[in-house]
Image (cartoon, rainbow, N blue to C red):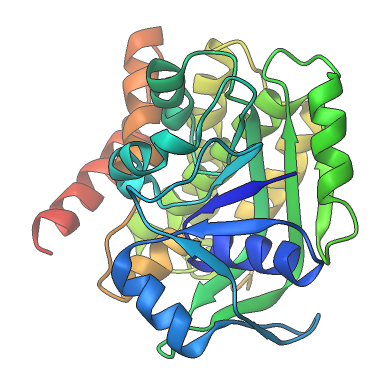
Amino acid sequence: MRILVVGAGATGGYFGGRLTQAGRDVTFLVRPARAERLRAEGLQIVSKDGDVTLQPQLVTAGNIAGPYDVVLLAVKSFALDAALDDLAGAVGSATMIVPVLNGMRHIDLLIARFGEAPVLGGLCLIAATVDGQGRIVHMGGAHDLSYGERSGEASVRVAALDAALQNAGFTARATTRVIPEMWEKWVTLATLGGITCLMRGTIGDVAAVPGGTDFASAFLDECAAVSSAAGFPMPEGFMTRTRAGMTRAGAPTASSMYRDLQSGNNVEADQILGDLLDRARGFGVAAPLVAAAYANLKVYQARL
């Protein structure tokens, strides 16, 4: 199965690198500058699960040779528009596009560009970053990749995809609940990102101040209300676990969006909070805390 990984950053580089290490037919679609560095230094993964330096197959936009069986789309959401143009030549009648971006807006854009058939649902759980040396650093814990038909059916093509992704050094899982799980991840990310970015602190920092746990709990309820209005109510167990995590005293937990903000980098404000706010307004769901967090991040972005 020919796999094209779009993006060789923290997410695409890690999962694509592990697949390469496991002997799968993987090519990375990258920008010329990234290609030059990878050719010179290799794709380096640093992880407690094993360090490795690889010499991956690379391709740049305009040089894609025919359609691929799988396109693993792993760019940041704000790079999506350019990526869609770059990967267009890789998509054929039997291609499966597996996006692992945050939020849901990318699904709409992929369908508008390539039609319903190629687009699967997908999500990942990993804490990884690209360090100053260009290495992909897996910070431990989960390295999970999930995928499935958006309709919820257990299809033959997803079974074939699942077989191709097994035993590659990370947890690969086909699911018939991929869209509900994507909403669960979105609610989690929006809540965690909104709390930590708006308050400029960790979950523990927020929980330590008067009204902090009430604020965090209310933020979760707003995000969950939008998901419910969209037809994906959050399960009771999910809400119990997530509320406990978002209000835990002393927790050092912070979102990747907060880490990006602290580093002066661009943030996925539009995709994680802005799109959620648009949907809230469309459904008539009040979301003043989401609106405040989004406005705060847009002010930050305007100063970059």
